[in-house]
Image (cartoon, rainbow, N blue to C red; front, top):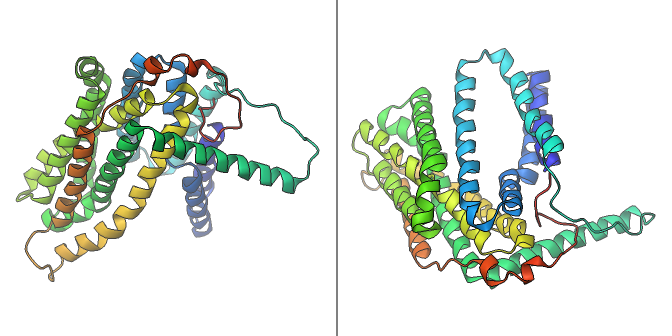
Length: 361
C-alpha cells in the first residue's frame, strides 16, 4: 500500500513545484495514471488489512471507524481548502500525504507471507511474463471466490446498482442545483460539509451501537432506504429548502459502505479478504464509469428547453430506481459467516505473490 500512497504524493508535488500550464498538464497526466492504478485501492487494501488484524465479530466496528475517519478527512480537507491561503495549499497537501506513508512504514506490520523468490537470474521478459501470469491467476481466483459464494454474488449486485445510482447523482448534482435553484458552489460545499459532519457521528457512534443489535444486513437496508429518499427528494424538489432536507439523508446512507465491507468480510476467509473486497471494488468502479454516460446527457436534456415534460430532476429520479433495485437485492441477502463455518480451513497457511490477496503495510 506504500507505493499506492506514494503516487498521490508525486502527483501533488507537480503543482507544488509550479502551476504553469506545462506542470498542470503533467499533473493531470500523472493523476489519470495514478487513478487508473490506485483509485479505490487504498481504501480497499485498508479494509482488507483491518480484516486481517481484527476479530470477525469486531470488524463492522473497525470498518465504521475507517469510513467515519474518511468522512472526517473530507470535512477537514474542505475547510482547509476554503480558509488556507492558496499559495500554501499544495505544500500542506504534500505534508499531509506524507503522514500516512511514515505511519505505515513505522507502525504497521506486514500480514502477507510472501513466497520466496526463485530464478533471480531469469531474463526480464520471463519476469514480466510470470508477473502478468500471477496477476491474472489472482484476478481469476478473486472472481471464482465471489461467484461461488451466494452472499458475495448478492452483495456485488447490491454494490453495483447502489454505485450506479449514487455516482450518477454525485456527478450531476451541482449542475442540477445550480440550474434549477441557482445554488452557488459555496452553498453546495456547505451542504457537503454538514452532511459529512453528520455522517461522522453516524459511522463512529451510531453504527457500533446499532450493528450488534440488528446486524449488518438491517443496517445496509436502512442505509439503502435513506439513499432512495435522498434521490427522490432531490429529483422531485419543488423548492430550494427541499435540497437541504434531501442532503440530511446522507447522514443515514453513509452506513451503506461500512455495512457492505462487513458483509463481504464475514463471507470471506482470512486469506481471501483482499481478493473479495478488491473484486467488488472493481464492480463498483465499472458502475462509476457507466453511470455518467447516461446521467450527464439525460440531466442536460431535462434542464433544457427541449425537455419532454417539466421535471428537471428526472435523471436523479431514474437514479433512484438503481437504489431501489439495490435495496431489493439487499433484502434477499443471506449473510454468511465464514469463520464460524470453516474455522479449520481458515487456518491453512497460503503463500503467494498477492494482488490484493491481503493488505500490505
